[in-house]
Length: 133
Image 1 (cartoon, rainbow, N blue to C red):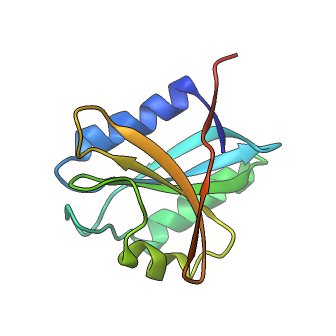
Image 2: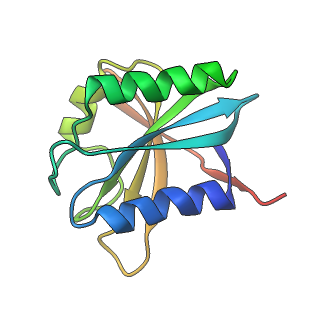
């Protein structure tokens, strides 16, 4: 994943703002670079999982497509654990093949951001490249 500092900071701020509940959202990309961040409401209001209203997600995906972008990543936070996909994340990812999963971990003193591809039960970390141009 390639993302600029301002957009990455916006995702981290979203995670902090929604804590102790998990936050969630999606990103839009152009030519492999994240250029849009869409915050979504965690309908579960839970520190252990997130759930998104289908219509809200549809509107966000449509807005990304209407802007000429591609769906990039699904992001969410882990407020009590490291930013590594949980079994709940793995199960949810089965419905989103090929989509990157950006996770903001808030368990430590400073937020930690990692990204993954989840294919079946296989979890592969993907480098998060911050483009400060």
